[in-house]
Image 1: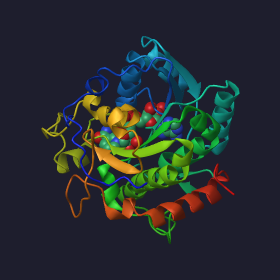
Image 2: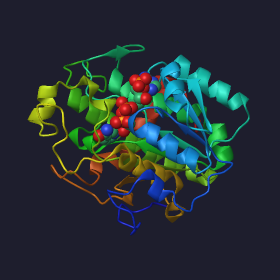
Image 3: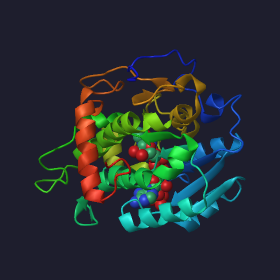
Image 4: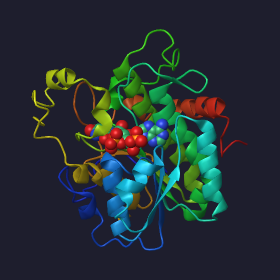
Length: 318
Ligand SMILES: NC(=O)c1ccc[n+]([C@@H]2O[C@H](COP(=O)([O-])OP(=O)(O)OC[C@H]3O[C@@H](n4cnc5c(N)ncnc54)[C@H](OP(=O)(O)O)[C@@H]3O)[C@@H](O)[C@H]2O)c1
C-alpha cells in the first residue's frame, strides 16, 4: 500500500536529536549496518544506535580511520567497503552474509557532494556511482539478510534532490559536468531507490524510507572552497556557521535514526522524511518538501532497471 507524503504528527522536530528519537526504544539484539558510520551524521547515527543496544556494523572506505573514530563506542565493528568499487561492495556483502546474521536496519548514509568531475569504475560519474549505484548494489547483495531481518532500509538523500531529476539522456554527465546537478541527480536517485525498493520488498516485510537530514557542517563540504560557502551565506570569512537553521550532527542524525526505528512508521514506507517527520510535497526553491520528480513510481522503476543493468545485480529479477 502507498504511504502518503503527509505529516503524521511525530511529536519530534528539526531540533530533536538521535538520542531523543530513540528514547524508550530498545535495540538489543538488532543488527544495524551504517555506511559512512564514522564521520559526520553517520558517526552520530552509530553512536545513538549502539547506545540503544544495537550491534552496529560500519563498512568503511578507510577502516583504520573508522576504527579510531569508533574505538570508544561499544557494540560497533568495522569492515571494509568502497561504494565506488562494485568488487568491494560484493566482497563486503559476501563476508557479511557468511556470518549468517540478519540485517534489521540498513542506513545508506555514506556520500560525497559537489566534487570536481571524477570518473569511477567503467567511467561512471562519481556522485551517482558512489551515492546511488554503490548503495543499490549493496542492498541487493545484502537482500537475503535484509529479508531475514524484516529490515528497515533508510536511504540518506538531501533537499539537494531538488537541483536535478534523473538525466535519462546523460546520466553520467558525458556532455558537460555540473557538480551541483550531479549531486542533485544522485540525491534524487536515493529517493527513487527507496520508493521502488519499498514497492518490491514490502511483501517480504522490508520497508524503505528516504530522508533529508537537514543542513549540518561536516566533512561533506570538503570539496567546496571557503568563498563558495561564504557566497552561499552558510559561513562567515572565518568559517563560522551563519545560518541559525544549521543543525548539530546529533540533530542531523535524528531523521535517519527516526526513520529506521520509529514504531510510528510501522506499516509505512516509500516516503521521504525530513525533521523527524514524513515530508509534504514541495516545489520551486522551497528549502523543504519532496519534489515530484523524486517520488514518481514510474521513474523509480526505470531507475531500478538502469541500476540493475549497470551494476549487474538485482535481487528481484524474475
Ligand atoms: N551535512 C549536510 O548538511 C547534509 C545535508 C543533506 C544530506 N546529507 C547527506 O548525509 C550523508 C552523510 O553526510 P555527512 O554530512 O555526514 O558527510 P561526511 O561527514 O563527509 O560523511 C560521509 C561518509 O561517507 C563516506 N564515503 C564517501 N565516499 C565513500 C565511498 N566511496 N565508499 C564508502 N564510503 C564513502 C565517507 O568516508 P571517508 O570519510 O572515508 O571519505 C564518510 O564516512 C550524505 O549522504 C550526505 O549527502 C548531508
